[in-house]
Image (cartoon, rainbow, N blue to C red; front, side):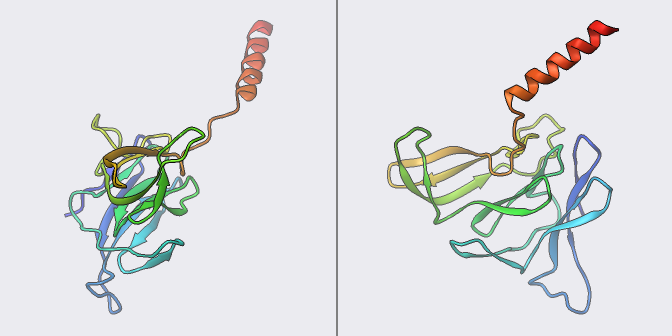
Amino acid sequence: MVYPLINAHDRMAFTARLKGPTITADNDTGIWVQNQEGILELVAREGTSRDEGLVLNHFGTFETGQPQFSLNALGQVAFMSGKGLWATSLDGDLQLIEQVGQTIDLDNGPGTILCTIHELNFSSGRGNQDGRSSGLSDRGELDFSARVGHFFDGAVLVSTAVMIPEPPIITLCLLRMLCTAFVRKH
C-alpha cells in the first residue's frame, strides 16, 4: 500500500514499486513528487548512484508503505538514503545535504570546531500539514541530528542549502512604499 504525503497546495509525493523486464529487486523502488503542473517526477530511484565528492552514494531501497521522506509546501522533498541526507531544491534538483564521514564546522562564529559526522537522523514522514514536527520546513530548512566528533554525543543541526532566500530588506522597504503610495491615491 502507498501512503502519499500531500502538501498545502495539494501536490503529493510517494514511494512506489516498479515492475518490468529490466526491473530487479535492486532497482524496483523510488520516490516521486508532483510538480507545479501536476506531472509526476522521479526524485530518486533505488540502485542509482550519485557522485557527490566525498563518496559515491548509492540509493538504497525506498520502502513502500509509511513514508520515509518529507514534503513541504514548496514541493521540496527530503529523505535519508544510504548514509546521506538528501533534499530537492526549488528547481527539483536533488542535492546531498550531509553524509556520514563528512567533516562539518559546528561553530557559527569566527572560530572553528571541526567534527566528523558518525551518524545522521532525520524526522521524516510528514507533509507539514498535520501539525506534527517535520525535518523539512516550508521555507526549505532542514533540521536533523547527528552524532559527531569525540566531544559531542549528538548535535541538532539546521541546513539552509535548499532554503528559499529571504528578500533583501531594501526590496521589502520599496514594496511597502509602493503599497503606501497606492493606498493614498485611492
